Each structure stands twice: as C-alpha cells, then as structure tokens.
Image (tube, rainbow, N blue to C red; front, side, top):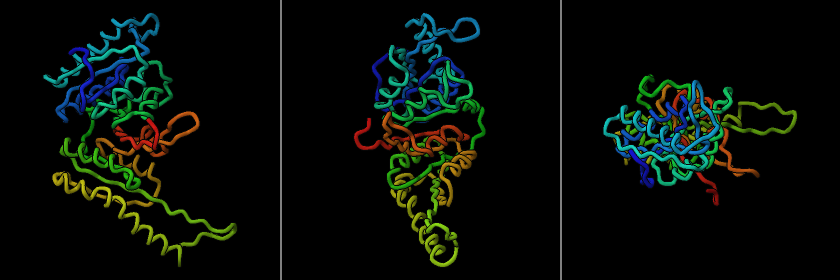
Length: 303
C-alpha cells in the first residue's frame, strides 16, 4: 500500500473520513474485486484532521492526509484480503483530483456528501463537480444507503436508455451485469407531446390516437437498436427490455428500488457558467434507491 503513479483501468475512490466516503470505499472495494483490478484511494484538499468528536479544518498536514488514506487502505484489505491498493494523498482540490484520475480509471467512485457539507443537502459540491466533469464512468454511492454487504441483493443492473447516443452507457451496463452475474433491465421512457391551437381540447381519438400508436412502435425500437450488438457480445447476460410511456426520471427512480445499480448516460449541457447534468441524471443522483453509475456523454469541445 503506497503512493504510485496511477495505473490504467483500475478503480479510484475518493475518501475524506466521512461516513458517506466509507460507504463509497466499501462499494469501490467490491467493484475492484469484481473487475480483478487494483484500487486507488485518493484524498485531496481540503485535508482534515480528526480531533475529539469531529473533523477540524485548521492546521491540515500531509501527515494527517496520509494517515487517512492508509487507514482507508487497511480497511479495504480487510474487506478483500490480497486486494492491490494504492494510496494517494495529494495537495490538490479534491474534485479536480478525482476528475484528473478519472481519465485513466475504469471506474471512479464517490460518496454523495462529505465532511463540512450542509446536512440537508443530498449531494455535496465535490460529488456534483465530479459528476459534471468526470472523463470516465462515475459511480455515486448515496450516503443514506446501507453498506454494500448489508444491502438486499436484487442481482439486477438497471440501464436507462434515452436514445442512440447512450451506446457507451449501454456497454458499461452489460460489462457490469456480466461482472456481477446479474440480470440486466433496459428501460426506455418516452412522452407524447401534442400541441393544439389555444382553446382546442386535446383528444385521444382519430389522428391523435394513431400518432401515439405510431410513436409507441417507433420508440420501442430505440432500446432494441442500442443493445442489439451487446446482447450478442454478452450472451450470458439475461436481458429484459421495457419501453414505457411517461417521465424517464420518475420511472427510473422507481425502478431503481429493484436494482443493485442504475446506469445512465451523463448528458451534460453547456451553460454560461459550466457544464451541468441533465434533469434525469440529477433525479437519479438525488432520489435513486441504489448506487448510480453515470457514463459520460461529452458535448463537442467539452472536457
């Protein structure tokens, strides 16, 4: 257990001594074990010291940071004896560090809210910044979830598909299902938007009913096309495809009750200030009943 230059294709987890980070650490250990790859534990600024009953932000030191990551590494090895663990306390902003490490990692894992966050917030600033900028797959572990070893297992990976641009998220979901020896549920939600002149009622007869039926048939083909080649590549993964009319955010959140992890594309939008996640991703990060894996769908020119 020592500090090294980051390898490629490993699992990275950010820790800060909080209970939420402890949940993320245990999840990351499981992900590294399933993949058969090393685990890198990183801790970035602000460094914290634990004095008495709570964290202190005064007088941080490299020694305190190293103690924290080495303690986390010892805990990881207790979970999975023989696991290769690397530790990296780095004097760099935590979110920037995790984003940089994500470029070489197969998976980056974070908790939802660390030390110093407001108790009423489900997601902390580090989690949101990493989710908006990570260069590779990111797994966000809600702090209100039980530890991985104490959760009810569903042996199911849930994949949300919006359109054909979600191919990378689909590939990740199949890999995750194969590694877990789990079933894969592919869920595509769609809505019918019908605009009528002011004052005219929206009817469900005649042309409108035909439009809905035609759109339903077309939408049902979307997830089938996205996963067709992957089903051939992963014949061992039992796959169920569902196409549902309704709000993608609410449908995926509800379906996550029966999943061990929900996978979605990180649809990012360029705002005047920064990249921002789309509404479905935000809903999952705040309300999903299992860990959320976001797979980047970077707009042109974003990094």
